[in-house]
Amino acid sequence: MRRLFTSESVTEGHPDKLCDYISDSILDAYFLRDPYSRVACETVAGKGQILVTGEITSNAEVDIEKIVRDTIKEVGFDNSETDIDYKTCKVLINISKQSSDIALGVDKSLEEKQGSKEKSEGAGDQGMMFGFATDETEDYMPMPIYLAHKLAKRLAEVRKKNIINYLRPDGKVQVTVEYEKDKPKRIDTIVVSTQHKDGIGMDKLKEDIIENVVRPVVPQELLDNNTKYYINPTGRFVIGGPLGDSGLTGRKIIVDTYGGYSRHGGGAFSGKDPTKVDRSAAYMARFIAKNIVANGFAKKCEIQLSYAIGIAKPISIYVDTFGTGKIPDTEIVKKIVNTFKLTPKGIIDSLDLRKPIYKKTTNYGHFGKKDLPWEQIIKIV
Image (cartoon, rainbow, N blue to C red):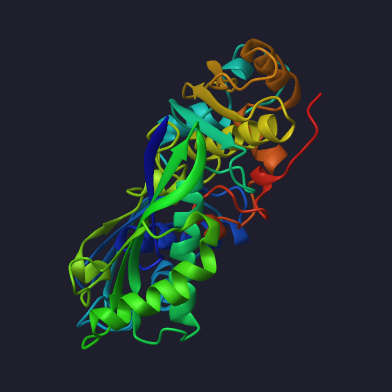
């Protein structure tokens, strides 16, 4: 049976990703000075204006406005006529401390309050988090999102290195993969929409993108004469970033995870410290799923962890290997319980999440990057 599946990625100049990057840059700045900071920081971007809002409790002093401007500059936005200018944009800051009601549950778990001798933090919120892995790529990621991220990253690279010197920071990529018997067979369609300077002909843009972005990234054996390319299908993309569209932290959660190939719990990642299980438990779920596949227990694996605010241990653990498991899914659950620490404190300690590593995660997916702690492969017995 043949089927098509599509995933998208965006560059760091996409207005939503700009907001994610600002929020994670602020989080890293606090963690650099105080690794026990509590941060829930969101960013809104619009025409000529950035708003940073949320709750932060920390012993650190951080110049948030400077981080905002430095981050916009790093991304490459410096023109108020076509996107946003880091030098002249307005920066509004609306930050308060974390709610004392939330802190009651996070600082000491319900288990500890009820007499458990083990000191433990409670989950910072209720919710369910999913992790996924498949053996169809070297990074244990689904092929559509794997290639979409690589193309989006390459799109930014050719701009920064002046390989294509007329590109601007905003951009999106979409990849449609044809599967046969559940295995990637070929690329059916590639869509690239990239911001550019005025006066560039579309024929040249298409030629440059295919030659310098697509061909160095996509394996040649996956392309054929029937592969379709749509490069800037609207014909013009000069105005971009927050001038072309508003941006908001947390709107690209499918881009951040598995491109829609796996389920998503609904919680965003960026701007949240690891006491928020929206983020940390999703990282742990990926860590578990990847290692189930890497250890040969299944070819494909999805994990769900669920939590209740103020309670340390997960309420439930769910495993689905989609019929590819070498042992029953119930046995895999037992291995998970025996191998992985699933309380918020256990996740933070085992994945070493109190370090300023979060800017690394923001762009081109939170998963599949070998230098991140939840991507390491361990032995499961």
